[in-house]
Image 1 (spheres, rainbow, N blue to C red):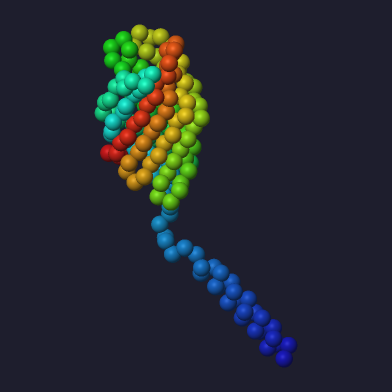
Image 2: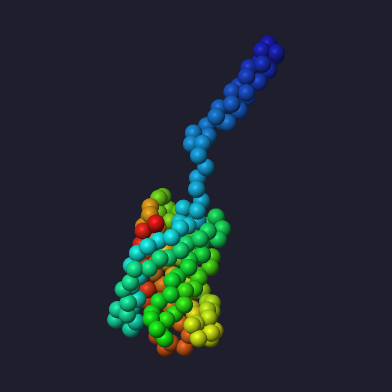
Length: 162
């Protein structure tokens, strides 16, 4: 009787182990990390507002590159014209979060510097950058303070992945 009870316990234990190990996800494809999904070149409209007035409304390319599995670097193209041109610059390590099929990113503040067309080093500060991605569509919003400018430039970019 003891052998039958032990044998039944062993069969139950084996069945439990097999049952638990077979209850995995049937999807054999690995999930693509958020940064890899977002990375790419996006073409769209960049609207820049200064003191509540539209300063520019142009077609631009934003380049997003994977910094880690959960963060991206954003290359923001030059803006303005002539002596008022702000060179292209990058915002590094914007953290991303997935929510279903949507991906969002937010960074409170980022400071850097660029060299302008005259060779002068200019500081810039980006505040409140928000990135929203759904499928191949992206929206990037931020506030830019460049050099000694007394006011910030509020920017909204909406585009589609190339």
